[in-house]
Amino acid sequence: MLVLKDANYMDWKSLEFRSGHILVSEDESKPFEFITEFNSADPILDIIDCKGKYVTKSFGCAHHQAYSALTTGMPALAKPTSNFYESLKNIWWKFDKALDLETIKICAYATAIACAKNGVTFIIDHHSSPVAVDGALQAISEAFAEVGVGHLLSYEISDRDGVDIARKSLAETENYLQSNQGLVGLHSSFTLTNKTLEKAVKLAYKYNSGILVKVAEDIYDQEHCYDIHNKRVIERFYDFGVLNLPKSLLVHCLYLTDQERNMIRQSGVHVVQNTESNLNNNEGHFSSCGIGKNIMLGTGGIHSNMLRAAKATYFNGQLNDTLDCREIYSRFRNIHEYLNMNNFSGDKENNLVVLDYQPHTHFSKENFLGHFLYGFDASNIQHVISQGKLIVNNRQLTTIDEKEIKEKAKELSKKLWSRMHEFVLS
Image (cartoon, rainbow, N blue to C red; front, side):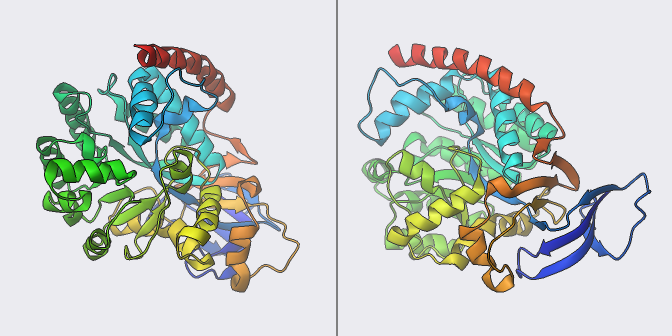
């Protein structure tokens, strides 16, 4: 068991500050408690000196794509792209085809390590690897578990690569859900036939899960849906029962009508905002107008730093959304409410970060939000506790050899880029 000695605890809900010793347990039913004294010689206690440090609940990422971990520094493509669809067809749909199980797992390790060191102890991931479907989710789960981060995984089911791949993707999802918590993942509406969409929703109902789907990431998604189905994306998903599943997550949601926004709000499902991913792909800007309060933050796989994501979302939202400090903090923390209300494990109160934060101004409940937004960042994270276990100690991973993983990732990245460019040029 862990003892956080002389900690300054910041309650993530009430923002109340409290000082004292904290006993942290791996038992989710009694995750942590304040204690007045302890035996420093007790061999079962692992004591961390938190004098002058701040402790609070760790963070979660509501939409990650671990398979993109090896894109950093990737060579430019021979074929230029001029719009969203070309970007998918010429880059991302070539990249995911180049993945094999070995690369998938090293991507998962790299992502989990980056998340852990950034204080992120729970990841909702959306995976795609059409040439390596079987066993992909288990490979990711094993890597995440070895690093020590909680997770909710999904495979991106799509008809874009044909009926056989869609069938394999559904089978991979069901195989994983038989013994693991997870979601039924879908790509955008424009890559899904009615038959596959119907099967995916039935699968979600069968396993008491939800649908994780990309929604109106670009106007092309809406235009295609109306041309083919004579309805808009949210209307189509509503008709198939996606919005009746309380665990469903609608990702992006950039190009919506007022009617669609109202349908989302009334359904109670959650929306996941990915500001930097949207900006990177020149897709557009998110607006919460009419959607409601069930909004969470993700990175879309562009990085693993949720404090950075919150800041980027706030500043971008000054021009394109209605955001103040309290609202951005709520979106940052809503993943915990979502996981708790749907009884997913791995994100209880024994998930904590210790911040070595030495502000040059007064710091209290009254101005916590100002420090959250303009003060501390990932560089202040010294220790990370996930499900009661110390997985980052003095900024170093305790569960895995980070250097070994990085060396392997460098080696595999070159092979991956080479395979990808063979697809691009073919």
